[in-house]
Structure formats: C-alpha cells, structure tokens
Image (cartoon, rainbow, N blue to C red; front, side, top):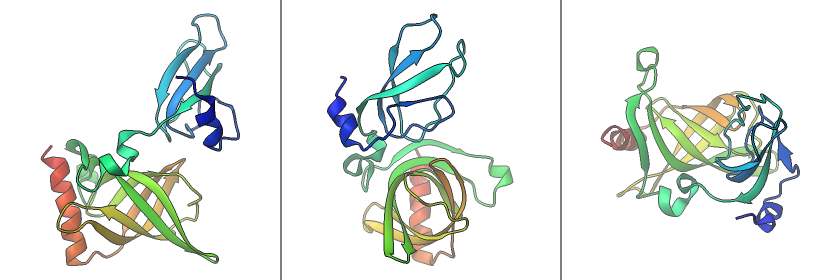
Length: 200
C-alpha cells in the first residue's frame, strides 16, 4: 500500500499537511495524532477535500500522503462520456436559485486564454444547473470573473459540448462558473445531463 514512488512522481513539494488545508491529491494518507489517544492510521482522502481536525486533539494532527490514486469520477474512461455518474436527484436551495441545481459528477476541461496562449485545466463537476456549474479544478484560475470555455462530455449523438462561462467564485479547488448565453443546442445538452441526474 505504501508506494513512495507514486508520491514522488506526483510532484508534491510538501510531505505532510495539517487540518484546514486542502488535500493536494487523491490517495491514501497516514494520519498521525499528536496526542496519545490514538495510534497512527490510514485514511482515503479525495483531492480538494478539506482536511478536518480531530475531535480529540483538534488541529494537532498531520496528514502524510502514502500512495496516490485516481477517484473513479475523475477518470475519463469510467466517468464519461457514456458513464455520467448522477449522485442525487434533489436540488440544492432550489427556492433561492434562478435554476434548480442537481448533484452530478463528470470530468470537465476548463480552457482560458493567457498572453502565452490557451491553458487547459482538468477537473470534475460536482453540481449542475441550466445557469452554471460547480466543479473542483486544480490549477491557477484565480482571476475574478475570468472568461473561460468549459468542455463537457455528453452521451450520443453529441460526444462533447463547449460552453462559454464566467468564474464567479472560488474556494480552494472548488470553483463556481456561470454560463454565458447558451444557444438552443447547448441548452438542450445541459438539460439532457440534468434529466440524467434527476432520473437516478
């Protein structure tokens, strides 16, 4: 289980992390408590998750990456384009939003322009509505209200749809994008994904 070679190849600069930080990679972590109430133990943590404090020793705990791996919803071969993973059919604060939001997971590609040319960032969606998308994206996408293009995998007959969007907020690796004006084909593609989520 403890494959240090995989950790070295992941490009991690830090060896250990503390509560309040975001998990840099998906993998198996060694959790070491600084108080004697519990022996060190292993835990599976997904990239982008907030490392939580211990209920007993609070922030006196460290997380060390032992082995990196890939979550199934981050893997293109399993998550898309035919195997979109709908987690729940309920909406999120639907009475407060212009469009009901459903939780659904699938990989996406975020493209934006820099002075040196286009940059592609890979991530995975966490929720979706006709008005926007929430996703975990690893990379340097910090400019407020940045204009981006989102590549979204689809089922047949269209394998992929690209929509223009605007970055509205960011919290660690979690990003919220608002769709720009959608044409009829793009809107229908988003609605098909939403029907997938709500029928599961």
